[in-house]
Length: 165
Image (cartoon, rainbow, N blue to C red; front, side, top):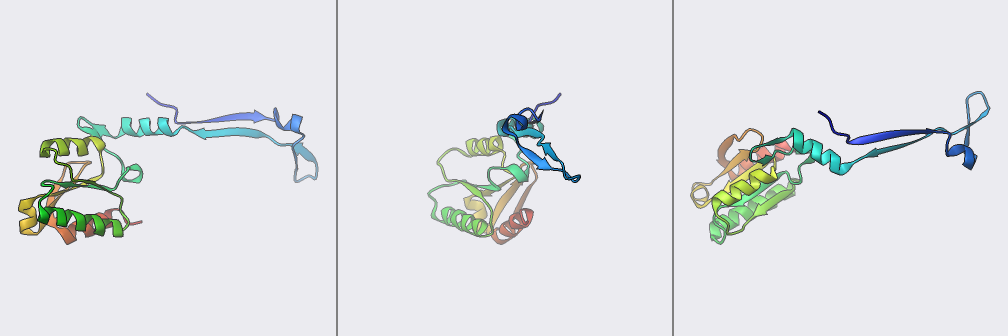
């Protein structure tokens, strides 16, 4: 199976002759320019990436083309301590050059997890009251589902390291 994500058309001198478009060759003689058209179909390219990088839960964006580097899931929006940690995480990750999506909706946990899996960001940062009380957050790597509980500082450093140029 395949999908056309780009194309090349060779026109030869079809258009350069009527325009009298010439270049001088190494031999000092004028020659008509040979022309071509080259294009990449962005929507086709996205379709090909999604076809290659998905699972039953949704898209699994490669880091290079993900719409965001990570997503912060606030498990208890409105809780002052959780909101504060989420805001700090967002600020610190943004300051380190990451593009971060922040879900502070009142949706149920399952709906938030499903939405973030569907969107397919490379990393999820899950912040809830229990973890905040212990000084930790949970990181989930979307590509393999691996989860790890780490300090906020370690989460920032780990994610910044993942996306360092």
